[in-house]
Length: 122
Image (tube, rainbow, N blue to C red):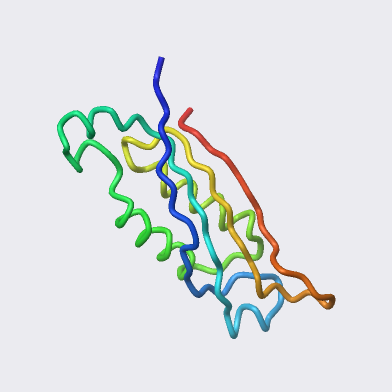
């Protein structure tokens, strides 16, 4: 049985040009990402060895690059790309991704729009 511990990164902010409207693509906006990475941290803890766990600083940089990268219409697509990137790290067995779009072009007052997905290795 594989044990799954959790490493969380919350509130990662990056500017992206995602959305279906031309103004979103042109001006861009801030997206906020929360991640929960599922992995077994026991090997790293036993040896106090960063190479046996996930380097969350590198993950944060990679996720920011995805947000800043090629524009997509949907935050669902953006979340999927972020999950795929996180699962490339060998120790990561599953990931929960929340993409926040607090500046979404909605005509009525609101606090936030989010998509939450969970993906794991096949």
